[in-house]
Image (cartoon, rainbow, N blue to C red):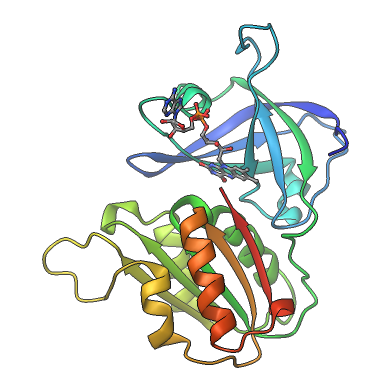
Length: 244
Ligand SMILES: Cc1cc2nc3c(=O)[nH]c(=O)nc-3n(C[C@H](O)[C@H](O)[C@H](O)COP(=O)(O)OP(=O)(O)OC[C@H]3O[C@@H](n4cnc5c(N)ncnc54)[C@H](O)[C@@H]3O)c2cc1C
């Protein structure tokens, strides 16, 4: 991939989404020329965090905010702290408001939203895979006539629901927005969908109904999900996917 410019940004806000996940809202300096499409990612690095060859440690992160938010020079990344072994993710979770982060991008050409596509949009996410889908949802909702949007989001248990308030608010306030969540390790008392996204798809989406589908999650989730959708008659052209 052709190298993009590196822009130094300041950590403007850190939002704790779940015990292991935070959203880092970065602010670009005035006059920064940076643009992207929902679904793209950037390479992040931190000043002074270098590998043993003296080069910056870089990792890919999906952009979780939408392009219109660049008006305020803001861009957001939602990052899971990997815990043991998570070299970069642990380090960025030590950042504080006012610290610097380096943003290189945008990258990615295949997993991008077409904001003018009028078809119903089905978003399927697992864990932090919701990050680029949130960017897409925000972009669609900032348009004049958003298409019907359905989000099926799988995570372990109640406390792992990233963007919980935002998505519940859309469900309440936005006509045509449907939210379904599935807990893969539900606590006692949970009465909603239980299981992983690919396990509950067949009941919810038994056949193709003209949607365009955006999928993001870990490789196993994406492979199983695509496999089901194809067997249910979803054309290849209607399926867009990203995995990490
Ligand atoms: C296009 C793209 C978009 C992405 N978007 C996001 C996003 O929005 N949010 C997000 O959280 N992540 C995202 N990722 C993943 C991200 O790039 C990193 O891979 C992730 O944060 C882990 O990096 P790390 O440096 O913390 O972990 P690393 O140090 O790279 O380790 C990765 C994993 O390997 C394990 N590991 C490390 N060393 C060893 C070892 N010696 N032996 C055994 N296991 C080991 C770690 O425990 C960890 O689970 C994205 C990836 C891609 C490719």
